[in-house]
Image 1 (cartoon, rainbow, N blue to C red):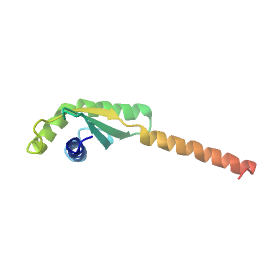
Image 2 (image 1 turned 120 degrees about the horizontal axis):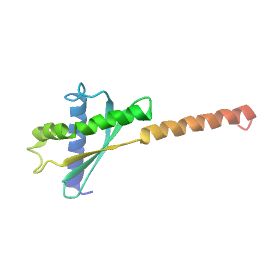
Image 3 (image 1 turned 90 degrees about the vertical axis):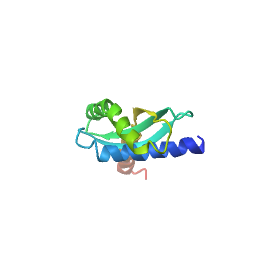
Length: 123
């Protein structure tokens, strides 16, 4: 990424995260964290990676779907906040980031393996 695209990606990440925590925290039944932003070279599309907290896969997917429905409103609010810093407001595309969930699952599997090794005396 060029310096310009990195700067715009950081700007979009900061603004979307702030909007989710302030303006849109009541309109959604989710706890969403912006984990990263990747922006196209022409600065027209921002791929926003979010992690949604929930007990089940279905609850996380429901939260993500409600976030996707808010995309036009989020982009509009973001445009008002960054319009003096960028020429064009990028289109926002949310992507579900499951890396935290996968990391937790792998840690649980490793813990089970450690316990089994300790039980068998293979320390």
